[in-house]
Structure formats: structure tokens, C-alpha cells
Amino acid sequence: MNAQKLSKRLETVAKFVPTGAVVADIGSDHAYLPCYLIHKGIASSAVAGEVVKGPFESAVGQVQKEGLTEKITVRLADGLAAVEETDHVDTITIAGMGGPLIVSILEKHPKSLDGVTRLILQPNIHAKVIREWALVNNWAILDEDILEEDDKIYEILVLQRGPMKLTASELLFGPKLMLRKMPAFIKKWTREKENWQRVLHSIEGAEQTPEIAEKRAELLGQLKLVEGVL
Image 1 (cartoon, rainbow, N blue to C red):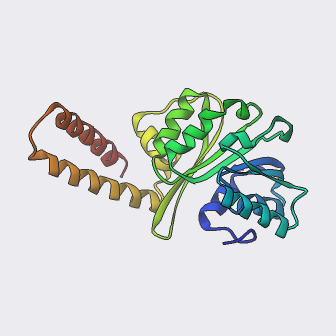
Image 2: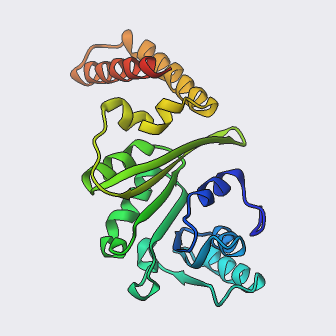
Image 3: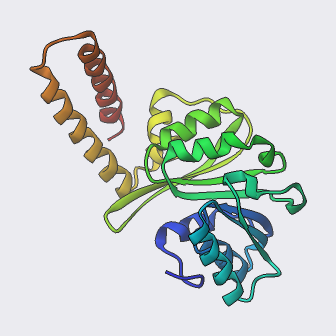
């Protein structure tokens, strides 16, 4: 992977960036995504934010190597603190982290979202918590995607401002994804179903404490939902 040829995962993130967008890529690592977006004429300018010094220095070097220092600003900062008002950022990408970490980044510097109209979020795990955050914070799901790469399955959520309502199934599986039932979706939730069944089987013989009873009820509820979509 490099600034000219992204991984399948990041290429999918890139396809949701609107043409002419001013992008902030948070946790940018080598700044491959911002460089790609500028090279392809998708983004007009970009900010690459990194909280760790090593990846920050890699991003600085990559932007210089690509000759994009006029178009991409690299900042060493904690999450959305990398975004400044004068950047006029309208699109934020956060990829390659767990869902709870992505939510914590979005919550820590809420003022940085003031001018933002689109969030493109790629959680490695726990996409549900992002949907829960979106519901509470008046963001709606514009689109979703799911893909498999190197035997890992990734979900991508594209959010725009506005209210939405989600059922329990939509919250867990994603409203767009559960309608499309792509191969990666079927594979992911078949794995989850089998895992839940194993856990349920293992606790059936355990002493029935209130905690065990609660866990059993939770698993049975999840299994009922997953059987409804597969």
C-alpha cells in the first residue's frame, strides 16, 4: 500500500469522500489516504492528524515525498484537536480503530465538528456503538459498506447531519447492510452467531446466578435478531 494504491479498506473509505471536500483524516498514520485523495482530485485540501510522534513524522515525510505540502497539513494532535477553524474542514475520516475509540475521539473535541457535514468512519470492531452515538448526536446514516480483506471484515459508516430512527436490528447490523446482505455481511454474522451459540452452550450448565441469567437473556436476544437477518 502507498499513496497511489490504497488497501481495499481505505479505497472504500475514499469512495465516500465528496469531490471538492476539505478532509481531516484522524489517525492518519503515513497520510496515505489524504495523499491519495489529493492525487485523485477528490479532495481540494486535507489535514492529516496523528497523536503518536512516529506516525506523525512518517506522515510529514510522505506528504513531502508526494510534493503535497501546499495541499496537506500534518498536525501532531490528540484526535479532533488536529482540526482548526481556519481549515474549513467539511469531511472527517477516521479508519482502523475500534468503535468505542472512534466515539471517544468524536466526543472529546465536539467543537471541531461544527462545520463538518460528513463523517466517514471505519471501525475494526463494535460498529454498533457508532450508530448509538449517531442517534444521540443527531447524525444519520447516509450509507454503509462492508468488505473483507486479509480474512478480516470491516464495516464503513457514512454519516450526515440529521435525525434518524433505528430498530434494534438496524442498530446492531446496520440499516443499509442488513438489506443488501453482501457476502462479507453473511460471513461476519454467521461467525458471530456461532460464537454466541458456543457461549450460550457453555453457560447453560453453569450455576444460574443473576449475572448468568442476564447474559443468557442477552445472548438469546442477539441470536433471535441474527436469525432474523440471515
